[in-house]
Amino acid sequence: MQARDQEFVMNSIRSYLQARPQSADTAEGIQHFWIRWPGDALPLSVISDILEHMRNAGELESVNVGGRTIWRAAC
Figure 1 (cartoon, rainbow, N blue to C red):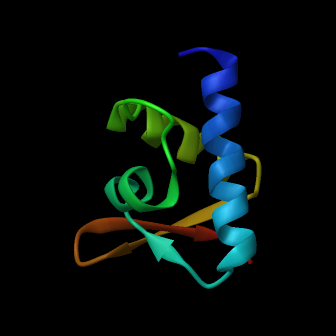
Figure 2: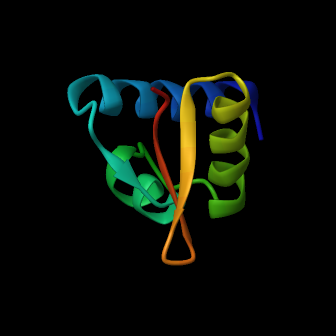
């Protein structure tokens, strides 16, 4: 993964949450609905790594709901 791809995804997530601060979704939902891809979407494994990075940076938090990990803005 290139640094510009990671920045694109992180900025897309930040923009989405800025416009919809109460949003929460799975990694699959974020990949599909939160990011407007200019071409092919990055693999889900890459999105998951970016979400983990953003959680470690204090930007996101995750909760387990019904066996699924849901991501949202950190409180």
